[in-house]
Length: 322
Image 1 (tube, rainbow, N blue to C red):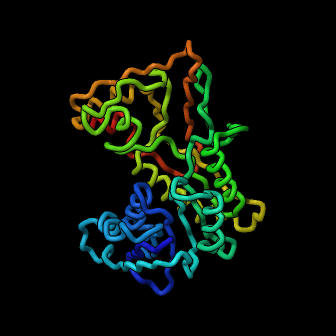
Image 2 (cartoon, rainbow, N blue to C red):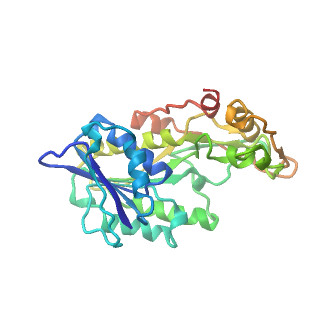
Image 3 (spheres, rainbow, N blue to C red):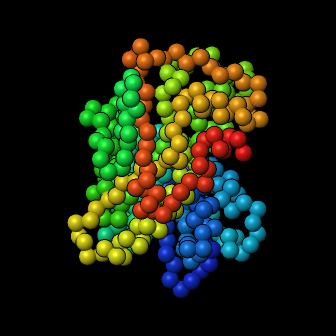
């Protein structure tokens, strides 16, 4: 992995440092929000990527066109070595599993090699996971209600989900570790809706082998980033308050906008945006009669309360209608 960019808002005598591993669609937004949050004005942030290919692009996107000195003090290290020769008090791991042969080992490597971990009183390690670890959910009639606190994980997950669960377990072993189980992420041009409706009318799918009334829980990328920032603040405060609790281990947070939509509704909401003018909603061929599951409904009220967080975009429909 390579250091993509180190950006700080100021250089105080003692600087708190945080690494963001994986500066892609989500990681870039996390960096942008951290840099612009006054609670982190004296922090130094280092983005870590697998290659140097997009470093200039990442810096431009993170810093924007802001020439204010608050954001302009940065350096591009372009370190071609795999080993990072320093550790960070705080780490956010948001690189997707697709970039690793052994995802759990990558998480463990970041914990051991990048994070100061137990050597700090309030250090935190945040891992952005997926609500997919809960399985499809529900049966052919009733949706499953999913909460952070009580819902068991599937006993025999598919390999991809199994890797994510094992990666989570590495984080949950640690005092100061947090797992963010995120709902289905989207942007205007990114997400299930864009896959179904296409970038052009010619790319619209004809048929989708799912139920039109099956549910998807959603979360805008900006809101996912905001939840990570809120979790970082929470971890710092809670560790300072509970430092004597040696049994305290990692926490799990389920994050969504609280407004799950059916696949049909997602397509209908998308058509309200001019980007999807001229599209036709695909035919969904799944059904209750075929035994297809209806899905799950996330209850993120615990997360919202504990992190003192709420989504900027109340729902996918609100976003597409704006």
